[in-house]
Length: 110
Image 1 (cartoon, rainbow, N blue to C red):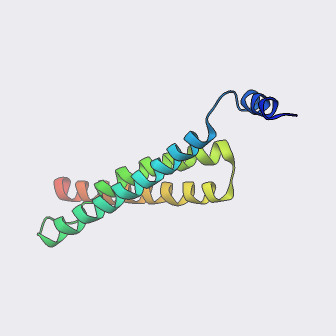
Image 2: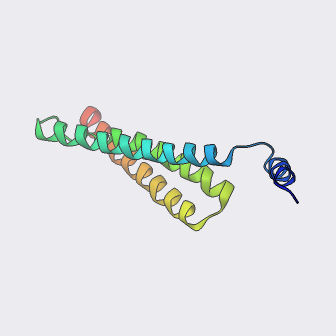
């Protein structure tokens, strides 16, 4: 097989998808999520230090978004790493949501 035949076969197998671009998009999504979690941590600490209490709503949203991304990756790729991250991020999102809802109920109803 010559170079052109190999490229044509590869394009046919991958249905003209750019695998490098897909990998970069996945990595960019993960880096974006981690950046958002870092910024939420800064906001969380500032709010706590300045006397505004602890707001777990930031974390609930960010871990829910990240958890959903990991769930989709785990479902499609079925790799152990993706499954572990899907479980961890999802549990964190659920946990932070419960804490945040409890805080709201305690503050406004109790």
